View 1 (cartoon, one colour):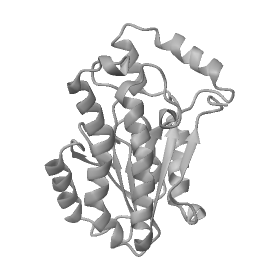
View 2 (tube, one colour):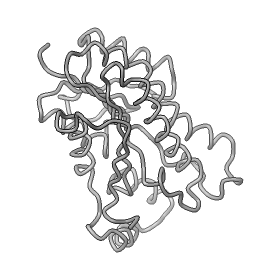
View 3 (cartoon, one colour):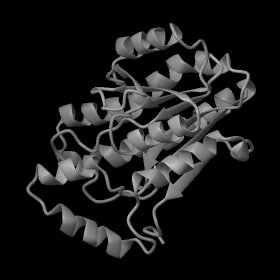
Length: 243
């Protein structure tokens, strides 16, 4: 196939879905690894739990049937918390393991098994990891989420150093809270007023609430020739929140 190929994890909703659409509109064949399908038939969804090695291997084998190489890998799949958040010493080990396995181990596994397909491409290739402002600034009660995202930053730099000799660039987009169903669902389940929460966020962000498309644009740019000299870096998108 002549089309370039992008693989996105967590591409069935929110930031991941916006990333999928960005690459689709720019002529890429797009594969989405997620626990559920989305309604866009142009996106090739493979049901996959990125924290499970056997499922990641099966996803790679499935993609290899149709594409022998890929140009872009976007690690977007993640969870805020499974059931509990709060002071770190109050977190049950089951909660810790769930968040770390998805947010950190998932990035490791997907990168590990898709790198051989990236290495086969003759085009500019890159990995972009979606992280959080909590990778830079830990929030009270953030628990293992913020810790996992800080670890993704370290993993991003390690991958960048290990893969530079293969011509693979690795960068990270650290985003503050983005208006997505991911956040809506979390606060709705806890009977919290989502509109009120967004209003408070907007007051803390001088340039307004962040939409998924803004993150997708940054991801696409980092994967493009325009960013060919950038690797091992964290691009913070926080709308001025941390100023």
